[in-house]
Image (cartoon, rainbow, N blue to C red; front, side, top):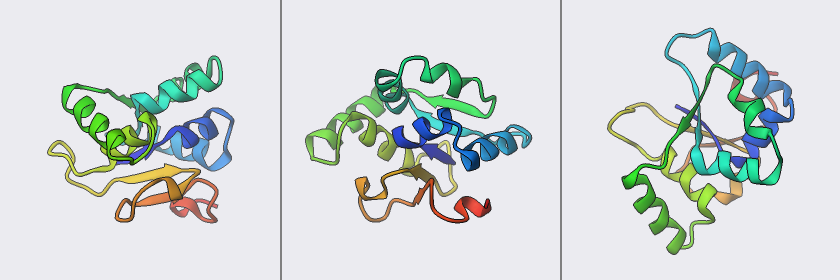
Length: 132
């Protein structure tokens, strides 16, 4: 699963070449999608009006909702000092879950915001996900 945090959502909406290419390629692959934690989308929209419309126009984008279990877990992470609501929701989405058995990759513009053990990829790293 590929997850976009708030900084990656902003980059996608801003026309980031590699992320736009990735979103286009994912749209052509059945069953593949880019997952955006709801609180990351909320924060990005709060920072920039109509950003969500640009991001949600990509057919490969799905929003990972903040259900009851997520809300409790994200709240605990915030209380324990792992970051703000959007960062903690992205972290929660990157953790192993029963409905997804593969490895999650968290795309971000701030790899230092996440604890060791979380697979993060900087959206501006050369060759991100094999794209140049």
